[in-house]
Image (cartoon, rainbow, N blue to C red; front, side, top):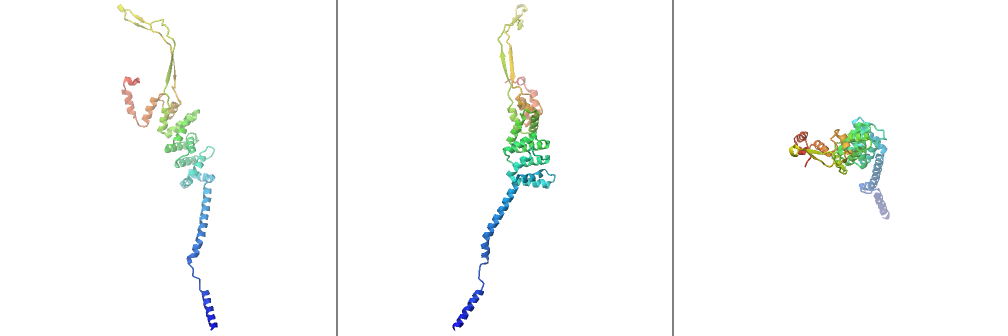
Length: 299
């Protein structure tokens, strides 16, 4: 009997061993999921970090941005996308491409200027570089494109820098700055120049009066047509006029290509006509029909 019981217990134990252990099929996957997530995270992070390091390399960006002046539209579009992706990192590279020390061709420099115009707001260095390019670049089309970018952005710092070039000692620089101001055509710059024109002043010095030797006037007021001499003291007057000309009017003459004198009145009329405040016909009608008092500038 005992042997029978022992055999039955051994059979049941063997069957229990043969039975597969019931486990949740998702347990293994769930147990490995955190490990996979951690490794995936670190792999993606390393990949992104490597891409960012590669993209932030100025030499790599410089080579990519060279296609801004490529003749193929696909290459130009790809370079523009690279500029948009780099964002703030692209601005120093674009400024370096506009440097006179870089042997970049004309079309590449035009593309760099356009890329700067499409990535506002400009930094202080970018505004100064645009102004320098508008005045000093060796290619005329690059200068024209820089003026168009300044006109589009209406950047006060760039316009102020171009005005500063207009007062340089070098005549060639003044001519280039006047050409740039004409291309930018910003009314604020012209108004600032007109506002800076000084009003001429005259200082008079008189000497001591002396006794005239001959009559100043002879009036026929005596009896029987007698003439009465009138003696008036004579005083020598010497005067000095200052502020007749100024650098503001000199620059305005170069910008406008006209000479309206050294008084603010003529330039104010020209400015009002330019911005459409006063028409040419209205100005000529006023000039022809003004009174004698107005012609003498009397109050």
